[in-house]
Amino acid sequence: MNTLFTGNAGPMDAVWSHQDNITYMGPDGTFEVGWENVKAVWEKQAAKKMGGKVTPAQMQITSSHHMGITFNYEIGENFDKDGNPVKVSIRATNVFHKNEGGQWKMIGHHTDILPFLQEKSVS
Image: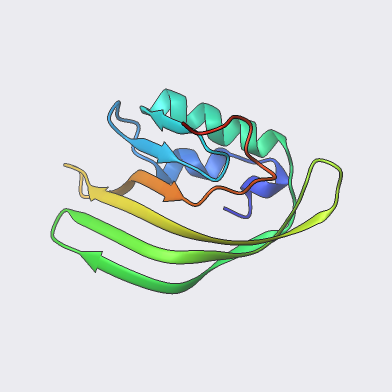
């Protein structure tokens, strides 16, 4: 995640499943389905080069043979479009699936909304 804040969305390509049924509900208020749509969101966020750092806190993990879910806070600091520091403290849920090749890939990400990132109202 912190690499994304420097402008590099590349690691998301390795972590995420590239299937059409994955979902992303991020801190900017978007709700996207499918790898191409989710990838576009990560690239757009990387282009903002928000800087800063967030770390997971109070991580809870639930897993089974083919599914894993993490529940945690993402806490830290980013910078808004004017370069002002903004504290970050949001809840996050991540869903992983073990594919046929035995690799764990993210298939879902859901966070609270961060007003400084929100581009459209959620209705």
